[in-house]
Picture (tube, rainbow, N blue to C red):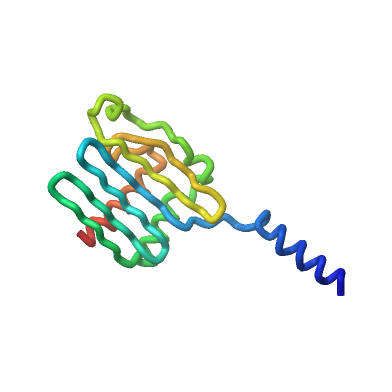
Length: 141
């Protein structure tokens, strides 16, 4: 009996070591002087926030299974570690020539910051992901 309990404790304690990483949320944020936009997509819900001097929008809607699968598929060819701190193709945000933007991918094990980029122009590896995120926002706004 003691061996069974010890074995179960061992399994519970070390199950996190072998846990499969799964994406829980994908976030996009963009902002500059007087403007901020964010899109947070989870498997079951999407949140869109837009805040400017003249307009404020906060909406929540259901994420379709198809949209979530397309998001995951768009980055499936890369390891999440390979998507961390990607170089931006341009650097106009350094002198206020573009909005500061970025994408973060949160999993059950880690949060991956994919680096900052100008406006809606991410690294090539993230373009399909961002396009799907923006498309899902446009459908509801």
